[in-house]
Length: 71
Image (cartoon, rainbow, N blue to C red):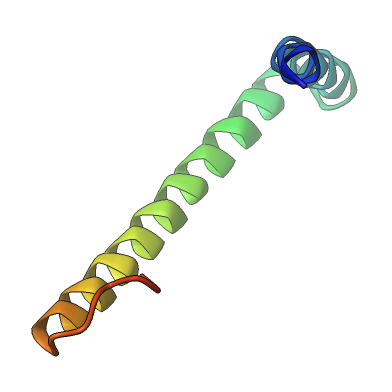
């Protein structure tokens, strides 16, 4: 099992780099960098929003005397 995880840890970043290179060849390097930056900003926005919702739900559950297990 550990061998599979190690293989994935090595292969997935290599696959991601290869895909970036291929896309950069198709649409250009600046467009590729812009797309990566835009998706990163959007992902950070979504992660922050979901984290805040989870935090607020946990606060409500604690305030009501419940264990915040679902949050």
